Picture 1 (cartoon, rainbow, N blue to C red):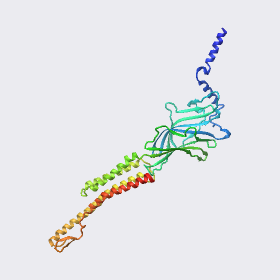
Picture 2 (spheres, helix red, strand yellow; picture 1 turned 90 degrees about the vertical axis):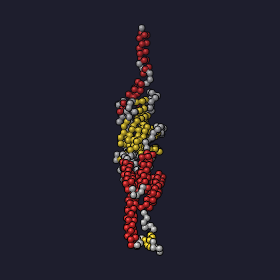
Picture 3 (cartoon, helix red, strand yellow; picture 1 turned 120 degrees about the vertical axis):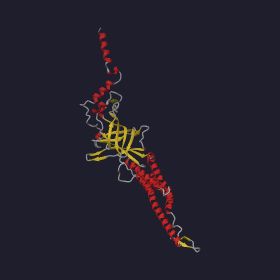
Length: 402
């Protein structure tokens, strides 16, 4: 009888032990409850390093997406996995030979670095379908804190060479309350400091390089360590070639059509001139509307201004031709009147002298020549050549020299 009772009691005791239920949940919970006991562990105090040194926090990033880049606001967006790693001697344990994943709900019970982004404008942490946070505790007290963030950061740009410009945008990370004597950040060495997932790219830009460095800042409260990730980008000109440069070239070429229209066809030539001037003005306004109001001249401003000058010059060329043609007609009319009068009086007309046989001849062979047609003929070749020279200088300078 007593044997049966002892057997039942022993079996119930065995099956109620943590290892009898399978896995280590109860052991992990017991370890965390012991380590995070508020009487022994204060989450408001940073981990103490050996010999009173500053606490070291290792940082690395995995880029998930970059962009878009906002030229007007001079900012760019980035989404990445931010990992921070440090060692907290207070959280060492030896009764379990594996790392423990700590729930995000216990985050308030842990000390974590106060990292922030000094040049950020907006930031958010992803929480769908659950908070994108990983907290991993190793037996030696090493903490790995990983989270997915989306940040919009300021990116001061120099747009002098726009749209053939190259920019460098920064992702700065800094401690908010701990000076460098208490806490310092370094990029991880065992893992890549910055890496990207396949397919990461920015619309309208080519990512040329991603480098890391330091950007220690000094404030009135002291010096704070700062890590910087430099993202070098180069603008793709394809969009602007199809939306701005090619259409403006066609408008300038269209303005040259007036040189081939007879200068007596006033409505046709005026229509072509006005149409091209108004079109290039509208296109120039549209191109500038996509950019901030900066105090310097951009490459796109030089291009649009030059195109406007060429189109306006073609329009004014017709004004010159019209004035010259009217003068020519006035001279011819006067000569006809004088000729008719002199024929009746047998006197040579203006510009004529009598030859030996008594017949009048012109004194100046170019006297009655229509110079307005000469101006049109010169413009037919002068304008295209001038525009070609401008294109060569413009593209060589901004693509290779600027």
